[in-house]
Each structure stands twice: as C-alpha cells, then as structure tokens.
Image (cartoon, rainbow, N blue to C red):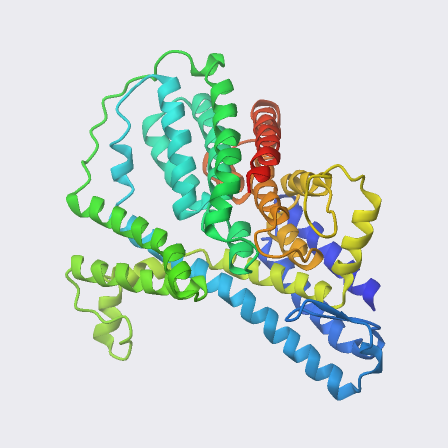
Length: 464
C-alpha cells in the first residue's frame, strides 16, 4: 500500500509540474493527490508497520501492535493535526491577500509609480530591483511581481526591454521574499511551523538575499539592452490621490505589524493577520463612505451594497485556486509524513550524500549539498511541496541554520527557471515570456545570484 501511495504522489507531482503542457490547473492534481493518498492510508491502515506522530515528532515502531480502534483514532488525530497546521497557513495567506486587494481597490500602488522619475535604463533597473526586494518582503514575492510588472507595462513600451526588466524583477522578488517571514509561502510555512523566528531569519538571510538580488542586477546593468534611455511617450497619468497613499502605507504597515504581534503575544501569526485585516477593513469602509456591514447579508439591499464594499470586492478577487492548491499539496505531503516515508527518505538521503557541510551544527549532519540540491530542484518543481517535505524529513530545533538555508535555497533557487516560482509563473503570464528565452537570457544571472547568496550564507551562519 505504501508503494501505491508513493506512486499516486509522484504522478500527482508530475501533473503539477507539467501544468502548462497538459493544460490542467495544478490545483486539480493537488486535490486529487491529497484525497487519494489519505483514502489509501485509511484503507491500508492495518498493514502499515510504522506511524509518525507529527505532534510529538516521533516514529511509532509499535504501530502494528495497536488495535484497529487505536489505529483509527491515531489517524484521525494526525489528520486533524495536519489540517490545523495547514489551516493556519491558509488563513494567514487569505488575510494577507485581502489586505493587498484592499490597497489595490484604492489604487494605492499607483503611489509607487511616482517614485520613478528618471528615463535612464540602468537607474530604472535598480529602482525596480530594490522595490521588488523591499516590497516582496512585505506583501510577498508573488504580489510584488504583479504590482511591479503592472507599473512596468505603463513605463517601458519596448517589449524586448520590458522582458529583461521582468526577468530581473523575478530574481529580486524571490530574493526579497526569502529573508522575510511573510515574503514567501515557503518561508511563511517555516515561520508558522516554528522552525525559524523573525529576528534570526533576518539576521541569517538579509545579506545573502541582498547579494542574490544585487549581484545579478549589477551584472545586468552592463548588458547592451540597458544602455541609454527609455523611449519617451507623452502619456498623461492620473496623479494618485492622498487617499491612495494613506491606504498603501496603512496596508503595508498592517502586514509588517504581524511579526511584531506574534513576538509580543506568542500567538500564531494568523491571529495577528486577522487583526491587521480588521483594522484595514475598518478604514476601507470609512473611506469608501459605505455604511455596509460585512456580516449583514440577509436583505436585498445589502446584496446591492456589497458591490460598493471594498472588503467584499477585495475578498472576491483573492486567488482561491492558489489557496486550494496549497491545501492539496500540504495535506498530501502530510500523508507521506504520517507513514514515516519522509522520515526514512531523509535518513537514506543523508547517507548517500557526501558530507560537504561539516561546519553545520545540525545534530544529524545534513549536508549543504542536500539543501543546495533542494534549491535547484525548486527551479524544476514547485518549492511548496519541497519545503513541506523537508518539514517532515528533518527535525532540527527552532532557528537551526539548516532551516534558514532551506528558506534561502527554496526561495531563491526557483528563479533559475521561469516556472520555478510563483513570481516567475505570474510574470510569464503577464508578459508572455517564453520558457527558453528566459533560460537563455536570465537563468544564468539567477544562477550567479543563487551561488553568491549561498556562499554568503555559509559565512553569515558562523556569526550566530
């Protein structure tokens, strides 16, 4: 039965990676994979020799001696545990996405365009790279990429030049997302899973991430495509209103408040995110001059007013397919973890790999090469299941340098291919970037940034 579960997982994984080839949204195989994996676990419960108790992080070798009722009870408890941990991530993401959409409702991101006054290509390159690096750390790399490419399309009219800018935005956004607990889904998973804390994450990864962004940008600034100035077009743009700026800074401030709230109260991050969402929603409702209550959906009058509520408008625009995809992936990986499959795979992987990272202080001596390969792998396949698997494979304590290296490697390694990160995929869709064009023109820059950042991490981790 274990072989069948692994086969289902592998086939589902392949369907996810081949999303663009088979023309099936990746959330579908993710949900199918989750449901079938857990169905096979339930059907084969009597045949499994081991069970991994995720709540205590221990492998139960005596599982085969349990009674049928005890096995069912343990499976239900494990399923509930994983659903709870997954729900923490999903509710957190829902809150963050809604705040970003509220900002966009008030055209808050138009304020950012006002920062760009130069026509010199190299200066614009650095402005976009730095903005991507900073914004992705606050509103996540996917959203930062969407915002900046939308602005890019209004500023840069030459298609070829714009593609290069988009490629460097992807690298910068992924680098910026790696050092912030709210900057990338995988980093958020590690943070919510109590594998990393905000202070140590920033301390370990800020410099490596900065170099991962700055070195490729510096090299790119010498490319012929970035010489000279942009073609000037007389286009009158509406100046952002004062309200737009207020909502931008309020929304960004509310998201940044979440790690502070967690540090002070020690409550799960989603609690702080819900508080931030509530505060932003109050101001949004006041500024929109709407008396609509977001909890009153009984009357026809409220249905009509719902269209004028910024909160309801924003909730209707969040990416629910992404939320369901994360649900499917995380729960499918949880099925493998529960059977101890990931636990055994981690042991075998560490025995096979050469011990390159002797300076790592991890108890089980995880090789640097293992983590670097995880980063390379995230360029080929989605980094979310890779990090989810690592949570089940490795059991180092909170803030062990292994978790920080995984956060950096998985977060920035995806930049090496256009399909290797959410930021890359959305840029691919917005600008119709060809896979092989990116491979030839941008991938080598991303690889250099990844290598430089990894080397920098190996130095910075010795300081803690």
